Every structure is written in C-alpha cells, then in structure tokens.
Length: 348
Image (cartoon, rainbow, N blue to C red; front, side, top):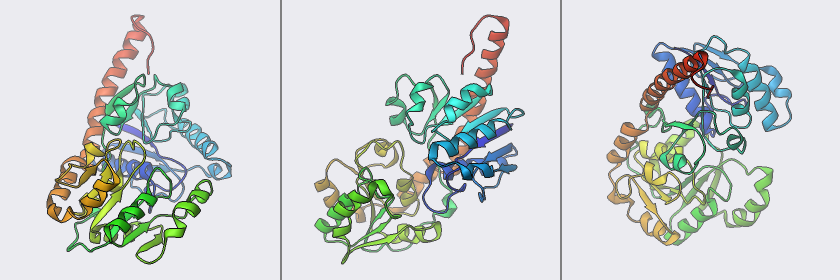
C-alpha cells in the first residue's frame, strides 16, 4: 500500500518532548514502513521518523500563524499524493478542508477537535477513544483507534520514590494547580515537569502556580525523552487532575508502561485507559485523589505495564490502523464504482 502520512509542521516528527499528534504520526509511519508499505511522510524539517520518504517545505517557516503554517504545509503536500492509495492526515486546523478538495481517499485522526471539523463533518475521521466518538454526533467517524507508544522507550523501573509527578503543560485544563494542592494535602513532594507557560496562560500561571513554587513543590521546566523516563519510573504516582474531557492521555499510558500507576479525574477517556484499582485510580474529587496517593503501593507495577502492552502499544496501533485502512479503501472503491455507474452519489 502507498500511504501518505501528513504530520504537522509545528514540531519535528517525532518530537523530543511534548507533541502528541507528532509522536503518533511518527510511530505509525515507522510501523507501516517496517511492514513493507510505501510511506511518504510530510513533516517539519528535522524530523527523524523512519519512512520510505520524508518531505518538508521550507516556505512553511515564513508563515506567521499556526493556521497559516498548516495551510501551506497541507496544500503543498496534497500536490504530492496523486500516486498514493490513502492520505492519513494528522493536521486539524485546515486539513479537513483541503482534503475535501483533494479527491483522494483520506482519513483524519482527531487528536483534538478544531472548529473546522464540524464545518466538514462528512469527511472521514478516526476517533482516538470511545468517549470522543460518542461526544461527536453528526461527525462521520469511521473508526476508533487508540494511540500507542513504543514500549521499549518506556521500560519499567525499579523501586519507586516518594515524590508525586505532574507531567504536561501549564493550562487550567491540565490542573497543575490542583496537583500542587494534592501534594500539599498529602504531605508529599511534587515535581512539575512542564515547559514555560505560553503568553496566553502567563497571568494564570502567575496567580495559580508561581506563588506556590519552592520547598517541596519543584518546577524543573520542560523535559526531553531522555529525562522523562526516569522521572516516570521513580515517581510514586503521576497526577492528572484534568478539568476537561480529554479525548486521550498519552501521559497515562507512558506512566503505566514504566510501572507507575496514574491517578486521574473521571473525565473524558480516562476510564477507558486506566483500570481503576488495578493500573491506577480514576477518582471523582480532590479528596479522593489525596486518599488515592496513599493507596498506590497496593497496585502491581507489572499489571500496569501489561495493560499498556495489550492495549496501547505502537504495534497494536499499527495493526488497528491497517485493518481500518483496508476496510475504508474497500468501501471507498465501492462508492466510486457506484458513482461511475450512476447508482450513487459521491461521498467522503
């Protein structure tokens, strides 16, 4: 199969640090290429994912805004996919609109839901969780595939330490301020591994986070992949006090792969990813999160890792996408045949 993978132009694929969609696109491209498929990866210059061919566009760097960068990137990519059997898009800002004009069989993975998705609801989308699929009535979601990680990159650690870990970014939805409150109430040290807040979150950071740093609350800044793994391996638990219905949660599976049970609020896809009382705790309140901190020693690190191996490995993700590709292409060919015969109408 000849497959075009459209990663984003914002950070390299895979990223060295934060960047969920680029991580997934890179693992997918590499997994497909290893299985003998011809993979044309469109990604930011400096990307290192192994594919049959990797293409970057220098003019993307001259665009001034997030959406403009994607517009140039996807538009140029669509000029180079005529010989591909399938286009798999991971860009959400303008991707669905340009795919609608491209005339190629195309899927878009919903790493997040940009408003443009609803304007092009009849395009073909892939949900990353059952919760996300249920929450988007009226959107043409043709399948669900869980994100995956490279298990070898997240080996289990030895004995866990005493500190709690917040790994993510500074935004109210991610709940770093709540993680601080949990740590203080539990009497445990907290390590916050997060890049500096973006300009639109600086005021919130200055109010809710900065005054509480120091002592047992340590902010270490952004961490790369090399530093992230030992942090996960040695943490007592990973805290995810999310304030929104997150469609997936890579930190959850990275933590469990290292044998460290996460504690997460009952929001979004969390109950699909964490087995409550087995591989972590899914709680409904801050009080429950504080109490769960003292119960994580009851959980078996081997069960955490095995759960990820069975459900959220890169191999499992590639298997699921290949099955979806084949099913989707068969249906696409059938629709095109009906259209040519005058027995149907074109459909995405």
